[in-house]
Length: 463
Image 1 (tube, rainbow, N blue to C red):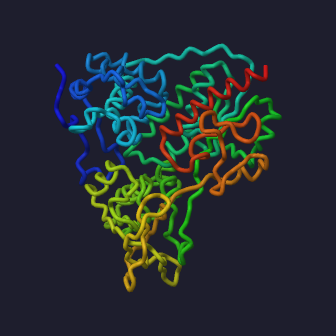
Image 2 (cartoon, rainbow, N blue to C red):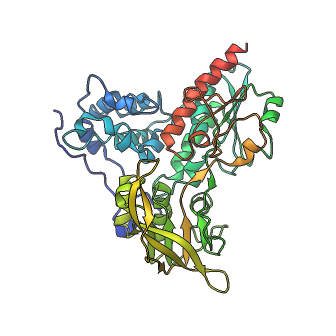
Image 3 (cartoon, rainbow, N blue to C red):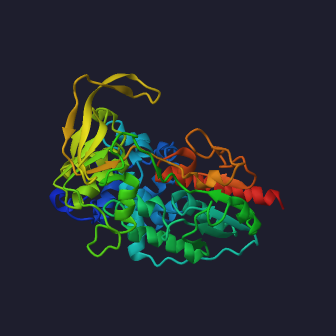
């Protein structure tokens, strides 16, 4: 019998006042019974609009129907035909603006919980299936992949199956890119990411860490090493700042550094080698998912008060609704229509406050959001001891600085064909945040898959 409930089956979660003191995963996942019940809400529409909303074209109604029948292994196998990171995507993809946004059930109620069901299938498979990998016979051609984030892993995974020798060059000491340095443990357990990486290693992908392309090797030197093509999936890890007085004070972090110390270098553990300031009153400037991650991490480090300082209204917040909801539950204080103009410090150079002005919304700007304008005479000071700047990131300039024939745009992003990832330099392809600027995991994966197909066609055309 179909489940015609207008509401999703709720997913079990840690209590907010417990989870805001630990880094364990917030959402605990569906049981088998919950997954079957939710899967039965799917109408298995003839035109399958949800698939059109998925950047990697997961066969959504097919895998959900299999879950409804209790065929969990078959559901997982269906997903991984097109999505190599289902445990990751089930947790961090913005399904509400992609596949679930197209769901017919969402017209008169809540859409089917596609993301939760994808996560369930992936977690079930990790627990119950002993996965084996067949190594595709090699074709004698080598491809270099720069960066081991979502686009790089996706590209490498497809290329290795096509028979190429694939080497991933990763700047950090650990593979995973933004999945390990950017997204906190309580949203994406790192053990899951490592399992996905182990799968690529088992298939024959080589990962070389501590390799900063632009320093260790240039793109041209990779070709000299015998690589037939190069894929750039180096992300957008260069933090943007506000350029206001006081940004050089002690106790000011970019969200990128703050989260890297916590996630990749485990600074939240008492025995961690890397230090981090455990502020008691913290202001996070920005309103995206990264800002939510930073704020929620700060409260877990023991802060008494954590503010999200955002210059527009709640309606314009770019973060996922789920992340905003969780942040509010955990006690994060939102200061809307508020913009910092100066960071204050003491005689020893440590942060003591954040001077702000109140804002009003004027006419829409180029983004379509109403432009904030300063409200006269509204200056005030937030007493804080730590400030985290989370207003976006840009691609690292190292690669473009050492590859003069690689075209980039005014924001430092690599210019690449939307369909193939082909850049201005022959044999060089690019995708993910290095091309688009900071975006989503699934969009980066889609770009990696598209580039892998184009690389295969390019190399074959060269004989």
